[in-house]
Length: 165
Image 1 (tube, helix red, strand yellow):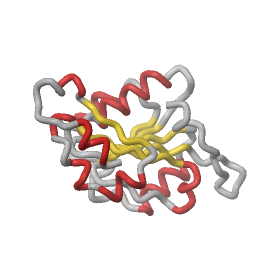
Image 2 (image 1 turned 120 degrees about the vertical axis):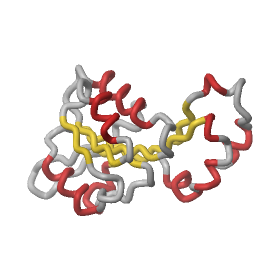
Image 3 (image 1 turned 45 degrees about the vertical axis):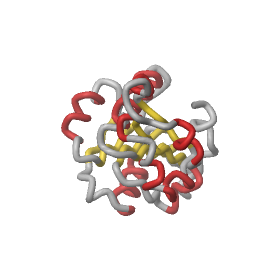
Image 4 (image 1 turned 45 degrees about the horizontal axis):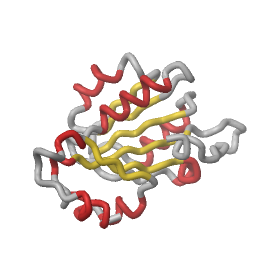
């Protein structure tokens, strides 16, 4: 995780550092909110972080994340566009901005140098899901496979999944 959290952060031209953006995308139920919650819990003592939740399950995410994330922004999944994300990036004061979406995120131009893309897959969804998002997998800095405890109970070929990367 340290490699992901240590890219160079760029200035917005006004002497203020832009937040590090970590964009997590993946199908509903793959564990994105759990990863955001775990990151918030682990980094809570280090400093405040912000999160944008742009998923159909945003209401449930609010309850799960509110005690771990300094500033929560909820945007409907179809309303998170470049302009709304740029506004959040410009106004957040936290050094880390976690963005949870279903679709892979198109990051604002001013933030591309200081971001990381994470795509999340679940064993329960099957090993073929990785082939449905080849561009997102290719652009990802990290591919996460969740719910590994289910491997003994669901048809999932790890070799096929990892070969896609």
